[in-house]
Length: 141
Image (tube, rainbow, N blue to C red):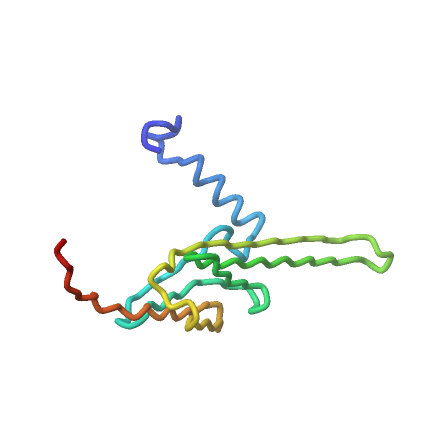
């Protein structure tokens, strides 16, 4: 934010300072709204790799609606620590979710495969077979 922060010339960045405080104090192990995805073209198919660390396979849903593929994942934890009287010493809850959609109009949706391993969701998206152009003769009226 060049020119918009009152501390611009002092070397102190208030926005990053608060962000760093937030990360270190609240300690999130699941980045929110951050589903890094790489897509490569392997000729006859696309291969999509999405990073979903901290999720179990059961937390992830893949939905096809028309020509759109949606990756959605939700995960929550609840850590309760109580003393011998049942009073809370610490109680923390976390919730993380991702949702991304991709156009798959040129994909053979019946042949899509997916695998989840070590926090990486790999989806193979076979391309539709190209149709040869139709040749025909037109009649003149």
